[in-house]
Length: 409
Image 1: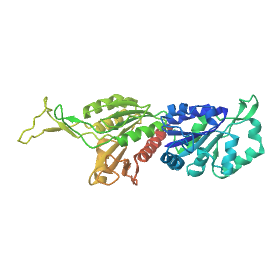
Image 2 (image 1 turned 90 degrees about the vertical axis):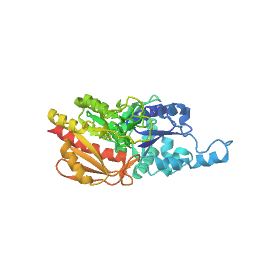
Image 3 (image 1 turned 30 degrees about the vertical axis):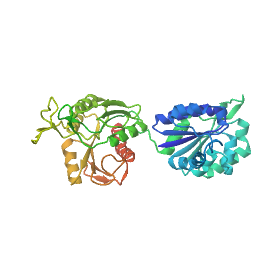
Image 4 (image 1 turned 45 degrees about the horizontal axis):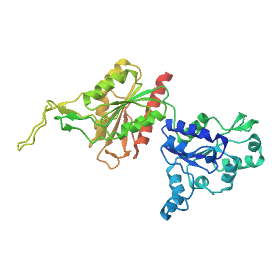
């Protein structure tokens, strides 16, 4: 999710920095657009340090810049407008609200308001007399009629010394409204979700290993999405090139046995387990202690099965009877439904999520997936191609429903 935070020239501009931080804690990518007046209250460097991104302050580059830079800057509002999922203006001054109502686009932020199709939210902050002025209220009525969501200001002591309405809403409330607009839920508050991701590597010798093509993207999408929905997340990951999400308990592993031990160590505290890792099914029975040198004769490897982590987790969860939900994954190349139902029965899972990795958009190293969900009650659901984050959201809906039912019973 991406949000643009527009900052206009009011005393409450400094509070926008706290909003940026809260949105980032929800896993939202934030970029900041500041009006010229806003820069009189807060330096752009503050927001650049928080977001790690450049802060947009002008519609056009400096006059002395070469023409290509001017052209790029002049159309940047279109790129920003297309890539964001919401635009929130904090604080929204009376002046800027009037410009929005009149459709005036004389700076980058004003142009962005007109160019974006994403939801627009405003959090007004101003003197009580300005807030109550008929012109301001008429402008707000126009904006509401156009679908702009207004986060009402609070009442209290104002910076001007007066007391009344016009104080910026609490940033926690603004963050909550933005998250509601984005569809971010907190239905996993109090849950601890254990997720496995990526491949395992099984040594042939000190140089070589057996592995698979798993990128870890599905498991990491699950971890990011579970965090956004309020869960405590334990991510047990094989070797991947992805950075673990902030605020997860990250447990790096390499082999199937290391993954097994890590999962079993954390299983008692988990309320849901999602086994998205592609664990190697076999490993060399006797790894060589030294590098196997190249020769002319064929080399035969004796392989033995690796531990069946999902089956062990399913059995332990069932025996403990603590209401833990267990979800397994199945990467298939044929007979998807038959293999998935067989895995569901053998492993003791509540769900098995299966995909045909030979399908375009459903295999390894891509950002999309095409999955089918198979349940214990015999039902199944075929999902269309969607991003792995959307698949993660759909699977966590299942967790939330299951755990909610357990809590209610």
